[in-house]
Each structure stands twice: as C-alpha cells, then as structure tokens.
Image (cartoon, rainbow, N blue to C red):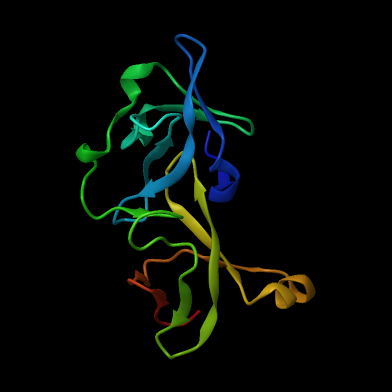
Length: 163
C-alpha cells in the first residue's frame, strides 16, 4: 500500500531488524536518486566505528509511525556502493532542506522545510515551503506539488513554466 509520508516524520525513527528483533540504528536521513525517487535510508548507528552504511529502499519492509523495519542484517550495506547522483534531505554537500524555491521568472516561493513522498512508488510528491516563522504562523506553510519542471540546483530548486 502506498502512503504519503513527510520526510521529517521518518528521520529519527528507530530501524528494527525483524529477524532478531534488534534495533540496528535510526533513520539519519532519506536518500533520493536523480529521478527524485526514494533510493534508501542513511543509517545512523551508535558508536564511532559503525558509520557509512545505508539501507536500499527495496530492502525496507515497512515505514511505520513508530519505526522502520528491515528483514535482517543483510539489508544494511556500505554507503560506498550507493550510486552517484543522489540527493539527501538534511545531510551531504547539497541537502534539499534549506534550499530556496524559485520560479524561472524570478519569483521566490519560499525555503524548502520538508519533502513529501509516496512509500509505494518512492516518488517525491511535494515540497513544504516556509516564508519565515511569522508567515508560517499567520498564513501557514505552502506545499508545492512535485513536477518534471523542477530542477535541483546547488543552492536553489527552480521550477519553470506555468504553476
């Protein structure tokens, strides 16, 4: 079943291995490929020596409200095997969160605060934008649907064509 999820609701959830009932870490970030499709979970682990691992999206059994489940330890792989061209929400050299969201015509729509995606298809379906705390309180945040006309830049997300 495909469910729409806010990335911010998934980050920080514990990751449970169903085979042994063991907590193997937590969701440090979500990773998306160049097609804006969910590709995996960057795993946050306890300890200094256990870093640089992720769980491919296909190895995730479920994303629940309280935890993420995987079948067994084999689902966890080295991040060095992750394909190039990936994007993350909060980490990495150019995270999506905090980027300015602008139109090709030069209109600033807001700053990306969160991303919505479908768990079944993995596709990003929308971007939650903020125009500052005062505007968020008075007007609320805006959710802009994802479209093929979006381009992820180093510092900005650019949308072209009619809204």
